[in-house]
Length: 206
Image (cartoon, rainbow, N blue to C red):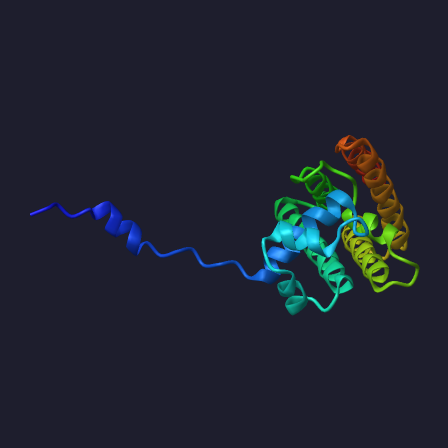
């Protein structure tokens, strides 16, 4: 009697990994391309080819390219919030909680990108959108949220009842966004690391 090909039988009965939803594939492809090439320069056909899905799938999941851009902006901010949350878990005191915001920006700069680091993906996208566009308003909201996180942590650093928290948080937010812009131009995290050092000095003086 011929021996059974158990290897072939095992392969035949190995379940196939579940297919990833088209929406997730499209969003991840758009995120890579929007960041690497820009929003305006990235067409629908390029996105669907990168995602490996039919063009119809895009319009089944997103009403328009604008809706896909909006989803990209939300996903990118959520990605940063995840980095920030992990940094916050390691912070041992109020000053380190402030610096966790800076560290999360550096972590985002060191992520793997298709054509290298190009600065803040939110601001890059906003720069391509017309004044008043929903995407620009969303980016503004996200940046205000970051400033709010800084204000909350700065308030923990300052003595109770001190009125400087909002002003110092705004100072730190402007410092951080300026460093991010320069870091994007230089293509590395050096400016962000220097920015963190400056922020730590400012916090040591309060």
